[in-house]
Amino acid sequence: MRGYLLNLSIYLDDCAFSHRLRQELIEAGHTVYVPADIDPPLTGVADELHFAYVRSAGLVIFTYNPKDFLALHKRFFQHPGILALYRDNDPTRDMTHADIIRAISNLIQIHLDLSNGFWTLNHYQW
Image (cartoon, rainbow, N blue to C red; front, side):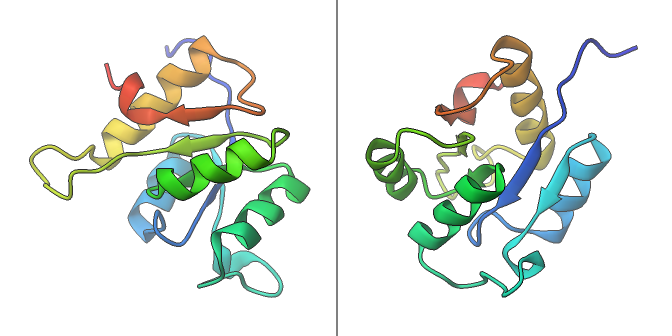
């Protein structure tokens, strides 16, 4: 039996979206939203609009664009949380989907409330 796990409502921004990652996060028990789910769709909009949406909807955002979202985090202190992933663009070193899901699980077992935080998933991959 798995230990206590808090399931998140996660929004995958444009750069983090993949059908496979979405499905694996859902299978792990998370609720997952993507830009195309929103009415009107947010596919291809600026990061500021994605961030405004997740702040109003109460969703944790997951991004492969840490630089821009760290800047938004510094401008807007109150938000549901940012999950960021730094990538080397080298498949031998980049985190797999399974690594990402495990890192999210590790993170939320340590920090039950992700609100207002900028969380680098690379630090939680044990």
